[in-house]
Image (tube, rainbow, N blue to C red):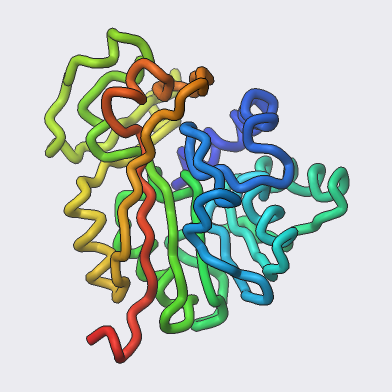
Length: 254
């Protein structure tokens, strides 16, 4: 957690400068493929609902939800990302209440939200996904929708290369050792975790979620934007993103 907080604080300026236009100040983009919540409505109609965004970054998604009539709270590990959020709040006139916190210890009351979402926020950097998912379950009301996007698990086996060179598998899908980068002093500076599709499903069901869908976006025609290992060459061959669409179970689900 400490390594990723330092990394996101260091890279927040670059991230917003590089990707801010694509994300839009008030916009809900689920993935580098450009899946837009305004089109797919995976969260449904949230007008008048209380919504939590986990790993909100600068609050672009949360701000869009507010523009749709939802009451939104965002949490993020990176203080610098949240500072960018305040800047965009001022520029757009749409403010989002936020807290600097980890997804594994949400500083929020039980059953205090109607829905929750996360667009590549927090979850790819967490080893104990059962703890994070359990925290989301704790703060949701029964029946509440929980939708989140992560790097597609099959992408783990391929190098971070959006070109033809990234089409050769280099590690087993079942290798769950985290990817770790170290600084000059040998300390972890970036940590990313891998969980298989089955691990995600078992963790979700284990803490009380019902899985409604897993969306695997195809790369759209005419979309030529490269974002790290995502791009049209590989995106037309296999999915780079998995979007889990779930809801917290109720008595009627048992």
